[in-house]
Amino acid sequence: MTRVAFLGAGIMGREMVRKLLAAGHQVRVYNRTLTAAEPLAAAGAELAETPAAAAEGAEMVISMVSDDEASRAVWLGPGGVLAGDPMAGAIAVESSTLSRGWVIELAAALNKAGLRYLDCPVSGGPDGVLAGSLTLLVGGDKECLAAAGGTLSAYSNRVIHFGPVGAGTAYKLVVNLMGAVQGVALAEGWALARRAGLDPAKVAEALSSGAVASPHVKYLTERMLSGNHDEVYFSTSLRHKDAAYGLRLGKEMGQAMPASETATETYRRAVERGLGEKNSSVIVEILD
Image 1 (spheres, rainbow, N blue to C red):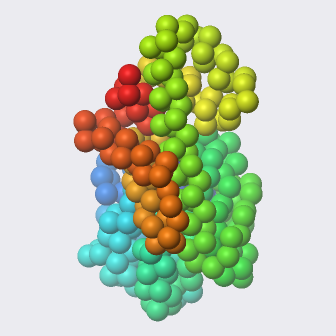
Image 2 (cartoon, rainbow, N blue to C red):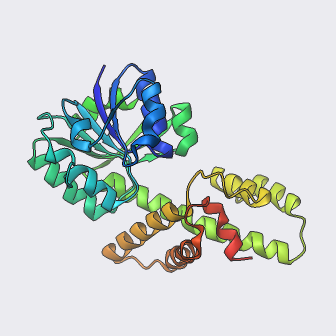
């Protein structure tokens, strides 16, 4: 049994907490809106009013929040983990999708405070959490990863160690940027097929069984066919945020990214139109 502090109870975080509880770990949860975490208390978690309170006495602190600003707040801000008295040697696991620069800066701050840090975004989405089959995309010390692995296996079944801190996040940004480009390309194709008078159901059937089919294409195709953009699996605002971080990484590396620039700008326009809290499949509505 590990004493875990969990920061963030959004779509991913709350199911990760449930898996940790089911595996027998003791979990204390902080969420910016505490009422949103109340169902987790009914499942056996303890709720904390600040990240510092959540982390007190914890052997592991896991964060799953929205962006760099939220991550900075829970770790380094007023009432954040370092504003309290975290256990020396505790493992800090940052699983949010963040910018590479911030992840490296955060690791230095937490290491200086005596915590061990893992750059550990995840792949698999909400379905992967429910199935306990997330893939951990890790950057950090191998010994730290070995110490954390047993606890993290509550919701994961595969670990890919990419290298030092920042490497896990770099891969996560690469693959999420690819997903953003794929989403915009699919939305353009879908809109064009409709304008050409093609039967949407037949287009969906062909896309889902043809050469371009992938789990991501199949999922987006189902949503575009149904028009269900209200049931959020991955919000448009988060898709744009991840793409923007990925584009920043590309510029830092000197990599030309014309398709990524177009995709990122398309998601930005969707957010600007008030569609940020819709499912990312809603992108088709601004292209049609």
